[in-house]
Length: 141
Image (tube, rainbow, N blue to C red; front, top):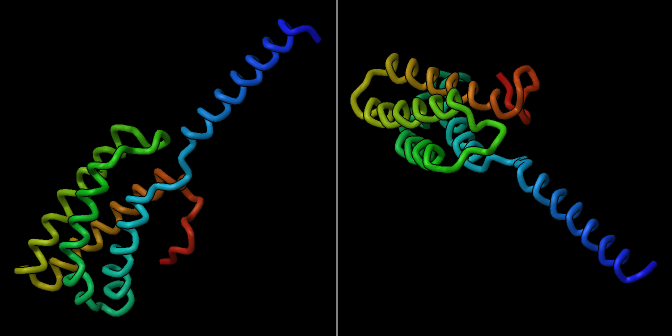
C-alpha cells in the first residue's frame, strides 16, 4: 500500500468514526430532568393513591414546582423535541406552580384532584419518552 492509499484509508476511517460518534451522541438514553421530577411525583402521589394521604404532596409541592420549572428550562432530547411535548412540559410547569399555591389554601378534594391531573400529565410525558404501551421502569398503578 503506497502512502497516498494509506492516507486515504486513514481519512476514510476517521470520517466513519466521526460520523458514528455523532450518531451516538444524538441518541440520548436518559432524561435526567424527567427522572428527577418522577422521584418527587412518586413521593407525592403514591401515598395519596394508596391511602388518601396528602401530607407528602403538601410537603413536596414547592419542590415539585421547582423541579418542573427546571425541567421546562432544560433542552429536550431530540426524540421528544416536539411542540406537543413542549406544551405538556409548559403545562406541567404552570400546573405545579398552581398546585404549590393550592396546597396552602385548598381543601383535600381540590388538592387530590389537582395532584391526579398532574400525575396524569406526567405520565403523558413518560409515554412520549418511553413509547406508548411499553411501560416504564417498575412504575405500577
